[in-house]
Length: 79
Ligand SMILES: [Zn+2]
Image (tube, rainbow, N blue to C red):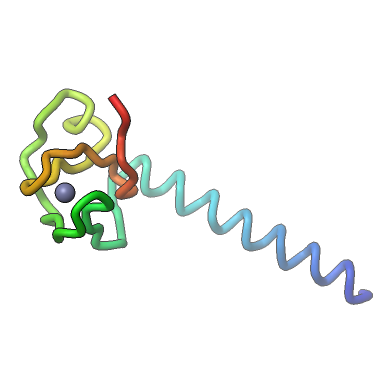
């Protein structure tokens, strides 16, 4: 195997692992990262009461301090 083949194999494995993690987390709703609010930087609780149907199904947070909504990946949701 030459270096370029090895490189693409490594990329493929990384992509496969990432995809499996994404599927696993979307099924089980587990977020391994402890998110902090991207707007105001305050820490978010790992477990919060859902404030909407979407959060109930998909997980996510509403920041206590500034009220912005985040999905379970910790990314802000634009309404
Ligand atoms: Zn905030």
